[in-house]
Amino acid sequence: MSNSSLAELQSLTSTSLRTEVPVEALRHETPSTGKANALEARHGEAIPMYGDTNARGFKTVEDLTVADCVIAHLEAEEVDAVFGIPGGNIAPFQQALRKHKSMRFIIASHEAGAAFMADGYARSTGKLGVCMVTAGPGATNALTGVASAHLDGVPMLAISGNVATDRVGLMAIQESSSTHGVNTVEVFRQACASSTIVPDAQSFQRLLARSMRTAQGLPGGAAHLSVPANIARQPIHRASVPTTRGAFRARPATAPFEDLRAAFTLLRTARRPLIFLGSGAREAMAEHSEVFTAFVTQHGIPVATSMRGKGLFSEREALSLGVLGLAGSKRAEAYLRDGVDVLVVLGSRLGEWASRSFHKYFQAVHHVIQVDVNASNIGQFLPVRLPIVADVGSVVTGLAELGQMIGPSSGARVQERWSQVMALKEPAPVIRTPQDRDSVKPQDLMAELDKHLSPDMDLYIDMGNCTGWTAHLLHITPPARIFYPCGLSSMGWSCGAVIGGKVGRPERSAVAVVGDGAFLMNGTEMLTASRYRVGTVTIVLNDNFLGMVNHGEHVQDRTQPLEDDFYGLGNPDLKAFSESLGARAYTVNAPGQLDALLPEVLRRANETGQPQVIVAHIDYREVPPYGDRFAAVASDAK
Image (cartoon, rainbow, N blue to C red):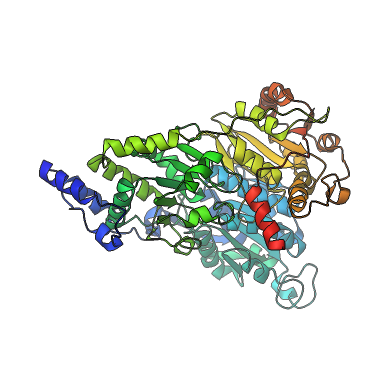
């Protein structure tokens, strides 16, 4: 690019946000010469949603049974574990898996736990999570886990059995049809992206391909197939089987150059910009984190994340504001409160968790740029000036290239942005005096856990007070990762997800943080971890209450004391419970104990494969950082 062209480009991108400039004008104001022309060429055409599958490698196999066809497809996707519970109506699949040398069938304690494991496996590996359960109650038990994965956009294939086709209408045991029993196809249709019954062997492959394409599509989610037992055994005369991973994975569209140019212009001229990362930016940040960090550093743009996006941008970076949303950081809240003129939302729906219960501070933002592969996610909460339906990674790299070509609007503007961020101070830590001799403050517990976060650690956080404490107080730096099931907000999710995550990535430490109420729901999956030598670590926040609802109701009605037994759990011995399931268990009831214990616990989990459980007795009186959520519920109740 010539000096005169660069000067013209810089001049045209210095438009003040104090004047209303139509987005169309922003889209076309930059000349497309030199490097800009090359950038435009890369972003000028959207990549087709689905690539040419013939180019990805398929082979034809004669007389492959339906069950073996499924296994062959999963093998091509490099899936090495399937989670479920056996039953007569999925016997053909069980038998096919028993014969397979490199694909394990992990038998859970409950079908919901199996679905949560498949969810955790998919999140940790980026592969397809697979759950197989029998008909009737097997399918309905798995429903919560499948729905949870779907609402978080996790690619999952759920296969449930059904009675043989010649028994339909005869009230066969566990019949799951439109004639008798529970119509599981229709039930799942309300909870995932697609749900289909397989009518015959010859149409199966088409339906399987559609389900895998849906699960790994844009957006991703869960797909369900109901397969009658006799059809699972039938041969497909000529089966076309993929030979490479990704045959059914969608390719996201690339952001148009005009949209990148408009977005960059708005960001470059903003006085108080903010980039907000949601979980939809996970893949982009994994691939382009260095480029992104260089861009925001060059331009002095602070970064916040949703809870599900926590840790995608290092929370130790100077420009990181941490989580902005329910239980978020005070720095992020203060920056938003003092005014944001340009908000760039990358891969977030801005739901209740992300928006601090749809807070008014968000609604005061003047210019919103929202990027998502799913058009229906855009504009749900806020009016969006510049919607971009595209791959987040293409936006990150495109903005970074424009930033290198053009540079900031001025050094003074960048310095002003940095000064605004540096002026934000975290509240000073409160000195807490334990009120109970045998408990630890949850804030202290989180501080001790925070000291031992390592690059090879994945955290699986359950729903409840533990959600708020971890989001508010832990500091995640990639490649450490943290996962939350915010879509359905399923209690007990982490008990299964941490196992699936460790199965998928055995070289990484897998740590679950869960409340005692949620642990009582799905803690029996410790037996699954013990049987299969899956060395997980589970930290149970034990306050003997359903703490989140206990504190939430206390906000609404102060006449109800926190000590009331209405939400009490009966003081079960969770250490003995865990040990009975084959885990090695420990008790923490004073400050400093987790700090001293955790390194050895992590070592034992990784070296022995025995699951480890730490039961931490916390002070139930400590109010979790859910002020906005509790206030909103209290307001709605009036």
